[in-house]
Every structure is written in C-alpha cells, then in structure tokens.
Image (cartoon, rainbow over all chains, first blue to last red; front, side):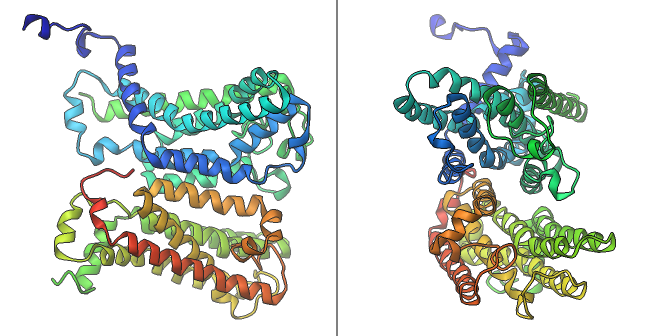
Length: 270
Length: 234
C-alpha cells in the first residue's frame, strides 16, 4: 500500500513554474489537437488556397528556395484566419464551464495556466499546418530530391511559423477582452487589412512593411519568394528587415501574453 | 409563457439568451461599412472607389458579419436538454438566428437606400439592387455558416471556413469566374465583376438555392438535437 501511494514525481505545488507550465501545455495540447474542427478548418483552408496556387506557374520552378517560399506563401495566406477562429474560444473556456474557482484553489497559478494554454493550444492548432507541410515536402522531395527538405524546414520556420505564433498568442489573450465572436470577425478584418490591402488602395496599412504577419519579408530576403505588397511599396527586403519582421511578430506575441498575465493576476489576486 | 409561440416575452427571453455579442457583431459590419462609405463620400473619394466600397459593404462585409454572428449562437445552451423537453430545439435555434439576421438585413437594406441616394452604387445595378446585391450572398453565407456550425458543433469552425471561403473567392476570383459552376456561386458578381445579364440572373438564383438547401440540411441535422447535450463545442 505504501508503495502504491508513493509518488514518483513531486506534487504540483512543490514543482517549479516551468514544470507547471509544461503540465498545463501538455493538457491543453491534447485537448485542442483532438478537436475535429481544428483539423477540418486548418486543413480545409490550406487545401482551398492550394487548389489554385498563386502566383500561377511557380509550381514548375526548379529553384528550390523560390519554390518552397511560394508554397509557404500559399499556406499562410488563409489558414491564420482558421487558426484564430478555432483558438478564440479557449480564452474564456474555464469561465464558461464555471471552473475558475476550482482552478484558483489549485497550486498552479494564473501564469502557468495562461502560458500553458498559449503554448499547448497554439502548438496543437499549428500541428495540422505542420502535418500538411510535411506532406508537401514529401511530394516535393519525390519530384526534386532530398535537397528540398532543409530548405523546406527553414522556410516553414521563417515564413509560416512567426505569423502563426503571433496569431495564436493574440487568439488566446484578446478574447478575454472582446469575447470570441467579436474577436473572430476582428482577426479576419485584421488579416485582410494588415496583410492583403496593399498601399495601392490608399488606406494606411502594415501590409508590405516588416510589420505584416504574412511572411513576405523573410520569403523575399532569404528565399527569393514572390513579393506582393512590398513590391507595391518599391521595397526589396534585406536580411536585416526579415529579422526585424520575425522579431516584431515574436515580441508582439510575448508582449500580448505578458500584458494578459498581468491583467488577469491583478483581477484575481489570489 | 408558451415556449412554442413567439410572443414578445419569448422573443425578449431569447434575445437575453443570445447575449449582446452576436447582434453587435452583425450590426457592426453593416453599420461600420455605412460609416466608411459616408466618410469616403464626405472626404471626396473618387466615384469608382466609392462605388466599389458601397458594393463591398453590401455584398461582402454585411453578409459575412451576419453569418459569423449567426453561427456564434450554436452550442450556447448549457442546459440544452431542458430546452428540448419543452420545445423543438430546431425551432428555438432558427428563432435565435432570425433575431440576429433580421435586424442586420433591415439595416443593410437601409444602407443600400442611403448608398444609392449618395450616388455610391455598384455600376449597372438598378432598383432591384436594393435587395439583390446583398440578400443572396447573405442567405448563402448565413445558411452555410449555420450548417457548418451545427454539423461540426463548432461556431469557430464555421467562422474559419466561411471567412476563408469568402476571402478565397476574392483572392481566386479569376479561377472562380472561369468555372461555370463556381461562377454561379460567386458572392460579388455585379459588384467587382461585370458579366452578361443572364449570368447575373443565374448567380442571383443559384446563391439562394444553395442557401435554402443548406438551411434544409441544417434542419435535418437538428432533428438529432441530442448531439448538443452535455458536451463542449467540438
């Protein structure tokens, strides 16, 4: 009996901030990755865009960096809307299920729960994108050889991932303020305005600057990818601007989470 | 109060259950768009930009906002089984959708009248455009959003997919217009794409036809309301 009751790991209360965050992230990941809606929406939007890839004709290119960069551009054109939409209901989930009091009585504080939610649910929602990307790399490897794999992994990390991390961080934090319904229409509006409405429309927009989230700068600077809004501004991105673009998105994601943690901690001081 | 009759008390109760977010989202898209067009007119925007903006609000943003708002009401009943013991759940859900969609549709109609009075009007649209520019896309988007939300038990999935399809129609306009079946389902025909009159007529009939089919399919799915009992949205 004593053996049965003996713990193999210390109780949660005795473990550090990081261990609690990892535990929360693991649970959030498993919850989110098992939702059929996550897979249907994210894969559906990728398939929709890739049914008629843009720009026409790039798929026959043998320049591997250009090829994978433009495929990455197609991947990231629609799917962030889906990522934001299916993550938006995570923020107020505990409150909706009336679990806040119960969770507040556990030794895992607000911080680990919030960061665990962002890391776990975010990673789970990006999982279908990664799976589809691996599938595409398999297809491209069969056509062009194994040289596609390192370029493809680099393109995923530089072009696709930063924007999705940024959208994921916003989607598990902003709905605390707006609720999921307004957030979903907001993220849709942001994605069009901030990434697709180029300067030719005469509306002030980050599209075509390093502060857009669609990965045009890393694609253009490091992979010779096709430029859209940046070209309208007469810009050919440099490596430094690509680094700035990625750093901006990751820092904004970090700031969003830190501010939300601060606000939630002040609201629930226990 | 008879829960099976749409009395005023019943409508007020359902409005309280729906909450503020869904009607605000539906009205924000159409009212926000109207403000944008009025500001553009007041600041002397070019006539073609004004016409395009009016068309985008009527055929694009108002229907999309309404569809997102309507789909958000699915899965909001923590005690759905109690509702089902006293009334038909399908009727309840459709009544709630109506409470979100009808005000948004009326405001969009007012938008159309105001836009035409301001001479911000999609080129080639006659008086029929007061309704035909926005009503078929709105029915199509709302119906498909409801079907997805009910089928997957997920308003998030409905918003993501409907938003993606809406945007894809714009991004992939050339490919959509080149295909006769897809052209009949193009939401922005007559606003950002000029076609012969008979093709416009086909499009304006095909959109509501698909919408009605989606409503019927959603109604059939709601014939098994136990799917909504005791579980979170998927």
